[in-house]
Image 1 (cartoon, rainbow, N blue to C red):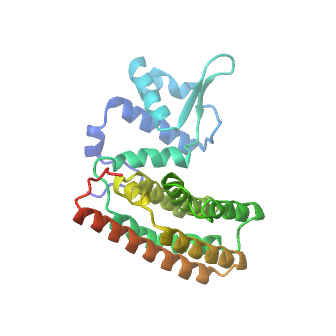
Image 2: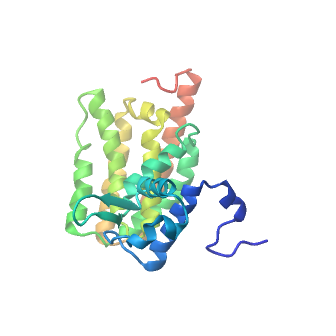
Image 3: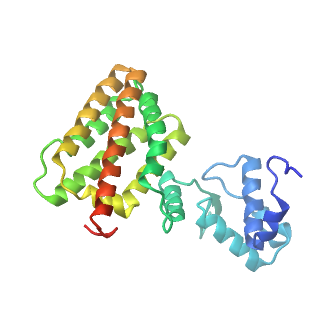
Length: 259
């Protein structure tokens, strides 16, 4: 039998603990009432008799919502339970944990990056404020010069990822921006990627710089199609390099966490 939209599968409900069910009920009330971050959650929603559970179960339910970032509690005069907003960074950190012990492959990540990053670049074309444009230029300045140490080169590689993160911050499509940021977080978190980033490769820095300077020019001119083309080429080159280096490390018998 098909479950009506918005309803919960009865089989799933049976697997949920009582506090989780209560948390789900309060969450639905918040959505249906149109409460916004900073609004107080009505006290009558939080009475044990209203949700038909014990005080202990209700406390656990509120802890679930607080852990999920959906509510915050304040004590003292004017205190109570308030609706909170989930920050994208916090949500990404939780999702990172989903793949902590079963990490995706580099190819898995770039399968999405090759599709999404060109659209991200096109979305910001001609739509950046002067301040946002300067923020992107600041990322590039961090790796314009030749690194003097291995540590500095590693920092430059991370700054290249920060350039893409900065693009996502200025994308009007929140789902596209969030997904691109999440993929970047996975790359930063993967042991094999961190090892590759620590390997000296002056040519890679020059190639990335070339693409990003070109991209900035296209963004400033508002040419969305050119932005797509530049970013697509950049992603294919980046994937090729990462896969080649990962394969080389495997052939050489490098340990996953070896620097």
